[in-house]
Length: 309
Image (cartoon, rainbow, N blue to C red; front, top):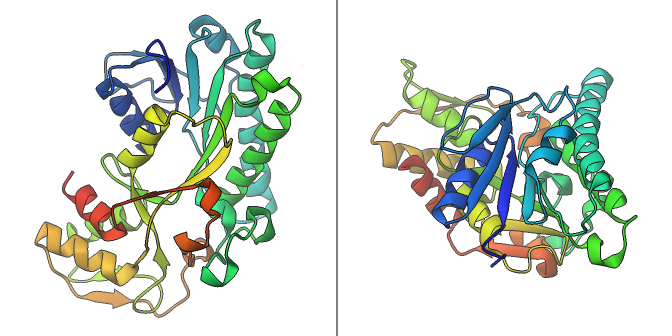
């Protein structure tokens, strides 16, 4: 584990990953020094600063609260999936502003051992990762959404920034790429959508695409949080993936959610192609084994845990 004095500043602590991460940190007898989010709300006792980091600089806040035992974790993300040059520019500007504040802080400190963790996504591999493409390079595939493009750009900017420092400093950042995730505080995604439709007055669950739908690995967010807090060599590989060891189809997921809730409705398939970013066929076995940590739970077990959490 990291030194017991490690403290965390969590950017985006009011979101899905951020809420779960702050609870995990505290459950591991560590402390959250500060949370930064747009609403100024907190799900715990630590101090919170209300800042929209996509629009405002915040390096002065980091200067006030950080010391040599602090790890900065960037969980905040823009879930925008629409294509188009205007959306691309908007996403890029948000990303640049956020990273600039972090980089300005790091450049201004006089001690080398600041730690920075960026929560990326396996979507940087695009939608073509399968068993026939063993160990494909993440740069060899076509990105499928603005969200994936945002993560791809961030990874490149972060790596280029840290490359300018000496060896003792270069390994103090890491990029973690989780697959699709489920768990408490879920605000979007397939499982959230199915739960919402089961609770509605609609007699059916309307799902995009053709039966049985696309397949993806699904991870419980708690596994990601435990990895962030407790993984002892987390800053050595610099970039690595975290995934369930298998994947699940839309039909399988819908069936499990209905079993766990006890609410059953017939599924109405749109028989239309769903949005490009939901067409992933990501096989965990195709990931580079040297940079992948696979959770022992199956995707469907992770979904059962999430529905009951």
